[in-house]
Image: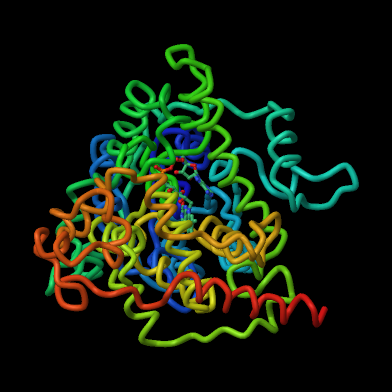
Length: 475
Ligand code: FAD
């Protein structure tokens, strides 16, 4: 009988242990289930729905090249799997494990329910370099601090090398019914706000492999120096591919350490970033409330202002602080934002506007193509200062100085905020401080063509520190 291989966040053929194991044993029914939205599984944000469409299309095409198919179904996994098993005679289902709380809850219950119906589940590792239940401190608990976690991860040094895609994926005697991808309506209709995404992205395993190759050949050596400069295009841009499992972290890790790569500073720094992803999953696994609740419970008493207008202006990139606005508009344009700028916009929302980090996290979840339940939640808590090993709350980014330091010529700002294109670099991060003649020459009318700052950073900073003192002094 055939084996069902359920693809989830592992939309790839290479280094896919569930698929390879199944293909080595029997005919394979590759299956993708569109799980009900309220299960919390799957790609639910609008930007990721776009990505998912293209990624499933790519996976279906790769399988077709192996004379196989991707069966698409929607519904509760138990119903779908049982039906396909009955119709095809399959007695086994293989999948790669997922580590987010909803995924774990679904899979644990499912495994049991399937066993009761005579269907055996086998699960495999592959979404992470190390499984979070196995990498523990000497006292057997989870890590809360990155550096010892990183040391342990490196020391263990038992990272399984990636495996090739299976040579042969045998087809079942008869194919189960599949839904049509187009009927899932994952793509935006009117207006097609995702039209600009393809300027940057090619979803799918081939797109991921090309990105990795280009990164290792062209950017890895300079990665340490360039990764913090938003305009430099110095990072791998692998995050959405990793989020959908179009590439495994082991593939990225080994490519960066491989013989053709300089195993110098660039590679070491890159592997450390991959380790931050591991750390986020480690936290999410051990603290499943990571996306919903402050890990530092003192923040439960924090007095957020949560002003709706402020929040809306932040989402639209109309705060009057160019680096913040450029970041938020990059997000609209490409479903992505450079890491340095993510930190700046998050700090601005939380500390300058006193909006609860969970609102920012939710906005990112809906708009990022790389939205990830672990990385997104852990990063927002990190910036807020409410997380494990977080930046302290009182470290408040000054959006002007951050802009001047990391985007000194304003090239990143001008790319995404064209209203400021003609402004002298000296004022590009502080148009509000520019003399009237300078503004006029650049064709800028503050408050009309580009907004005035929605808060005064110095006052906002004092306000944030006062709010923070309230929760720390009451402790
Ligand atoms: P590279 O610099 O090439 O790094 C390689 C890989 O390492 C990334 O693809 C990513 O998987 C991992 N990585 C890099 N930096 C981090 C980090 N700080 N934390 C965890 N993993 C990291 N990343 C996401 O993948 N999904 C998210 O939803 C997400 N939300 C974020 C929200 C905020 C507020 C902040 C500050 C950061 C967030 N990040 C998130 C982390 C980081 O910004 C992105 O992973 C990175 O910008 C992706 O670009 P890249 O692939 O070119 O990164």
